[in-house]
Length: 382
Image (cartoon, rainbow, N blue to C red; front, side, top):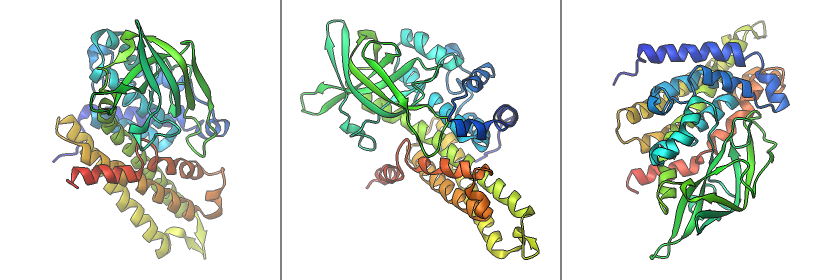
């Protein structure tokens, strides 16, 4: 198996590295402190044709592939996790449902602007009583004449409240089947629809530039053609899309671990204790060696899952493994990087503190570590 990037993928990786260093790095700490969503960054990413990496050219994308997406997100995430997070959600759960389950008319109307970066994609699953337990969602949709009437609340939804957002795709229940089980369906709900209220941004520990809000639907009426996919198949469709989302979140973990390793190594090389650099002390050497080894483990798992998807081969187990491993490795890497920085690592003067605050959510968002273990166990036949 060859994990060497193609010339095009290397060019994309270098493009994102240069962009991140030039357009994000100088401002990331300032934006983080201000909890500012840098809409101008995403307009520039659109100009670079980075908002439709998984979408075919006929719908406004570049169809660069999953490995290319990982390479791009890796470079952005090493500089700032919030921007990489916003982009990965847009590329996967925000856009792929339209590609995989939308009608041709829906693709032209909704997917093309997403792929071009004219709009930002969002998907609404989580509710106050349903996150890991996705089947327990309470938001309902009922058909009245030519309209679906939607009622309920979504929480922790990212990308739906920015100046670039069109609204979101929301998962609902649409009654029960003959077997008595809930039927699930997904609906396109545009901003400005009467009864649709977007809450204020959450005050989060990390991911300060990620626009995350509550979404309230008070008898929202959308036309019949806003049903995405077939009625009753929404949950299965979302879970299928989420498999690719796990690869992108795993990439966030990989990039965070890489950033923490680089910052820890740089600091340890110049900081002196007992008359010599920290890198001369075996205790620090062991920490750095473990961080480097675990980061390489994450890299191989993430790129292998991405490669499998690009080859059209089954990848659900590998995606869950990559997400589980990379997210937990990222948390440990952030902890060790702060430890190596000592007291300075606990101040906002050093960027390592920002990555430390961003790390924990990676073991929670888009499927907790516990859920990943359940997925893996099922794939093993348990």
